[in-house]
Image 1 (cartoon, rainbow, N blue to C red):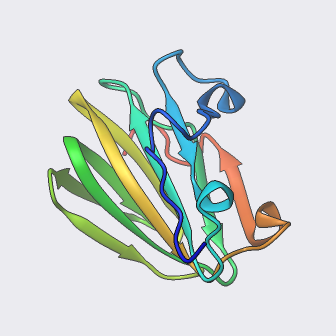
Image 2: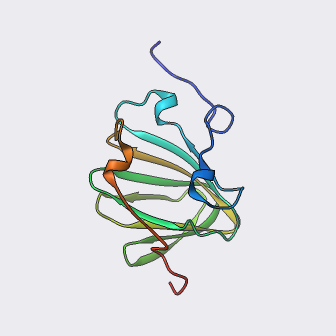
Length: 135
């Protein structure tokens, strides 16, 4: 088959519970289900007012975060930026990142390249509570 088709919410398993967050936290990791060979794709839904507790960086993967709903903020190394619907943020390898939802929640499509293969965690360095309340 020359293509794959899936609904990011209905067809892709939500693994948000893996992150010890509130029940409304959703992560739909679509890379394997779509058979992506060169990139990765994820839908994330962050509940209102929630700051995702893990900051992370990649050794080789570049990511693009696209806000498809709600609003929020994103911390990139030492800089915090405001996010609104249809904003796109490119984050190169080596840059630390974290995000939090505004009062209406935050919905993101995250695309990353290159594809991290069978060991996607091998490219990631993460720290819980990287973004503290004072920032």
